[in-house]
Image (tube, rainbow, N blue to C red; front, top):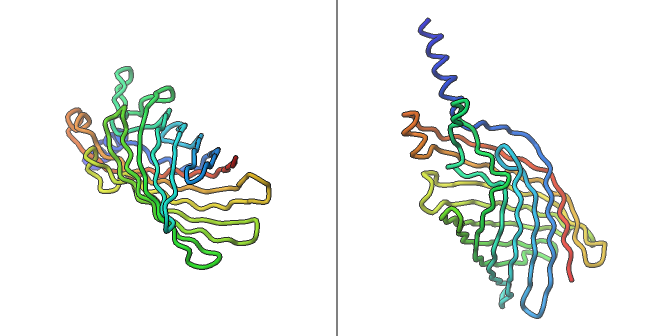
Length: 237
């Protein structure tokens, strides 16, 4: 009887915590580039999986090239369907903890970035990017560090790997809020286009909000793995 009660209490506690679905979902990226001298103007539309739903974003950015393979830029982003820790709420209708429906929730972010590239060989290029992003809607700051490497396989095919670490600035007890792993390839055989498949593994660390701790008297920390397979389309004017 004691074991049964203990198991029931554990199951109840776990039901209050977000679930790691570990499913593979489709994704799509479309980017348009216009270069005028040292300046490049970019429009970016993306559709990706998110916790219990889909995440869409529209980004408008401008970047400038500098000597020694440096570049810097700023951007503004409009997103829909992105979950945050405060969106894990108790539904008053059934008293169950679940993700709030954010499909139509619109948010605005701004950011600034600096990037450096190194030519390691005629076929291998390394890069490092540092981005500060501020979520205007949620008053959250994030520091993102993204190293990467690309390899020119043939005259028309290039492969790449990138890792991105998301550091929360004051809104989470986690050291790393997210970690992203990206692997893909791009085909340049069509004039003005880069097209190719990619795979992404985004690991998101969720932990309890003060509201959750007050309501349940417990805390939690768990990882959610968002895995996507998609296509990327880049067009250059």
